[in-house]
Length: 383
Image (cartoon, rainbow, N blue to C red; front, top):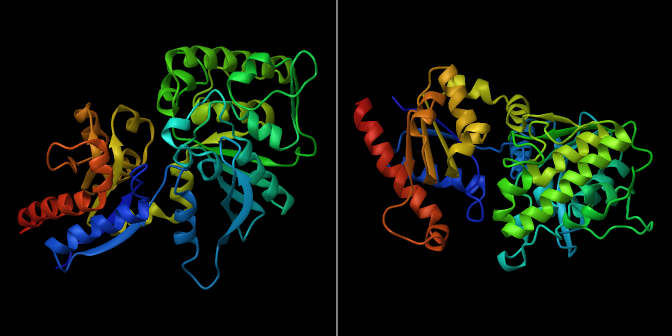
């Protein structure tokens, strides 16, 4: 009897997109078991890859559920690029991936600097969607290169961030230290905002945006102190002008504080990106119908427990008593916590000492080889 395998994986950042990860997993399983029936379901926690998830799962019937829209925008350093967002067919809504315009993968490592990177390009995508008739904006905010609390989005939509002399602030998180007057964009009162967010970090503090995510975006210790001060000042201005406290809201630190900024200014609702996509794609029904689940992501560590794809998938697998095998480029403790969450086992794809760059160059082969070994064991146990 063939085994029904559901492959639900995220991307391996800066290496393989989720769809290629799923294909590599399926190749490894097929090499070990020619009759295994693999269903590939590249997934996302609401950030990078969400458009692919929507396109693959909403356009399977005779009536498409939506389509990609391409428009001109800017990357986080203000350089011109083209980017896409997803427009739903059945309702006036658009899913915007912040990483499509303001993603860290678009900025070469030496040029990464969260003091000056901006979400302005994401704001241009949102502006285009609204001009095309969208009255509901769903913003997935993983993978950003920014730490500006969404200030660039506000500027792109026509808002004003002025210093004490009435001059428009330059873009980037550090400039927010000089904010004296915040004038919101006009004409957006009817827009419904949702932020697809799967982390719990607040805007500021030791677990906030600057301290937690700043270093991976290129911030030095001095930069972190500067950005922390800037975001604290921005939060105070939001409280002064809108009466909303955004410093400690759970998830507010996502994407360099974009979640907090848009919540404070536009009353954006912070929701689980994974749960939202889960409902849209009927993931839970697919889990009920399978025999075993394979999940994967580039890195599984303590932050994965806050709602990343592998752990969220594992929790659903546990709910329906399905074995869940996890695969990652690197894994770190707490291993017992992963087991309690629902992961039956967890494997690293490394097959020997190698540099990070070697691992990135060979990710597809390493995943395929790992799944061959893992599935050979699983098959022998089942027999």
